[in-house]
Image (cartoon, rainbow, N blue to C red; front, side):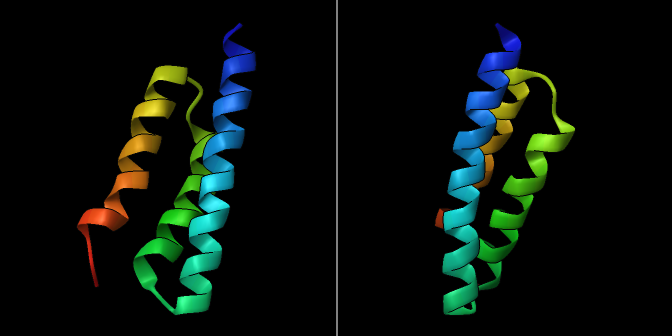
Length: 68
């Protein structure tokens, strides 16, 4: 069951990362671009579902608080 939920959460954060990446690339904004790349990479290095969700939510919230 953990493999399935890890796959689904990984796909969700990967899709959000794709949105951040394309937005950051088109607007030439550094923070969303780096958050998008880190959301892509996050999926490959974290194998615990709970840690993946917590870190993913933190990364998704970072562009709201950090404006450069």
